[in-house]
Image 1 (cartoon, rainbow, N blue to C red):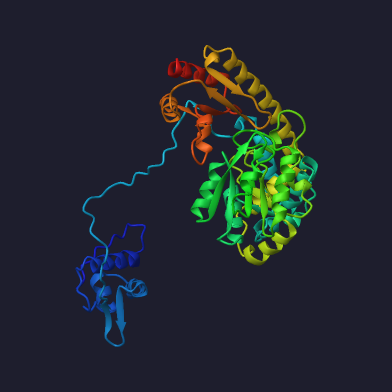
Image 2 (cartoon, rainbow, N blue to C red):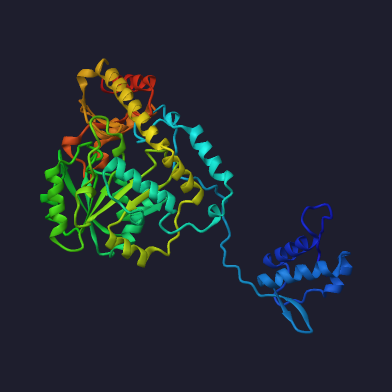
Length: 463
């Protein structure tokens, strides 16, 4: 007869306890394969439980394949081979990833969280929830809810001079998602061109998706079209409104050269990344290439992670009509990756003018932040050993450090002082001597005390 200990005070039901006990004995080979289990009546009498309890336990064992039922003969232990290897030593998994705390973060390209109107955002969320509308629980269209796409189209018209139909817009959770869908929509043999230096994430995405890409050098006017012509690339990724990380603006002649390149052969497209374009500090925003493209050869990409908040993982792309038809035919089976609740909240936030006011407020904040950072550096004891490369867009400037230290050692010494910052060469396919010891300084989310701490650390490092 089976040896089973049941705890009548346990929160687990008796049949679960019985099922787990028998299963454990089978796994540990305490019950021989093909051996017959006691009848339900015999076991119930032995344990002092109901026949129903035994029946439920046996049914679960039968369902999971631990026992077999033979008509008019009863239940038998199934023959189970355990292919799991015995653990010689139990080791706790330790991830190599570290999200270290830094005293100063000059790398993360994000706005100051405290400047975001959190109370307004929360109020908008509550208003959306208060409607208790069935639409909140309906399946979200593959390209995002119509109200948000309508507001995005209005925003692009008012702020970027773009004439866009809401039906050309696809909403998704993060820029990485958008690029992954694009890569999947085009032929896997398609070759992509990226700016050098440029976004590291773009190169990493192409590499992880197993597609070919070429790094094309940039100059003061953006990507060099003469070098692009030498490649076999069909798609080129550019950031004309604010080339990252150099911060330059692509002039009209270079834009027209790029449009001439894309129109030379069928199947070519420009992927225009307009990230951070809202925060141009001086003058009016530069119109995107999309607005001067008359042959529908530009794919426009942007995100709300900077204009709203990093946690709002909502990005979007605007596809030419021909590509939108292809996307619907080949990619519309993918569900939208942003919840309807978040989309309705953002749509209302934009409709009420809160996003526009927040962008204007952040531009003023960044002007003051930039002035503060520049003054601290220019009045510091290291002013003769640094050169500030001034640009007119975004919330980043380049800082040339006059030192014999390699980029690797300079970064190591700064990290040792809990300062997070990037070198310009980090964004190059291959390091370039002319970019040696050039740092990218994001000033939007740092205080005066943090800038002073950075200066003190630099005094110790470069002397």
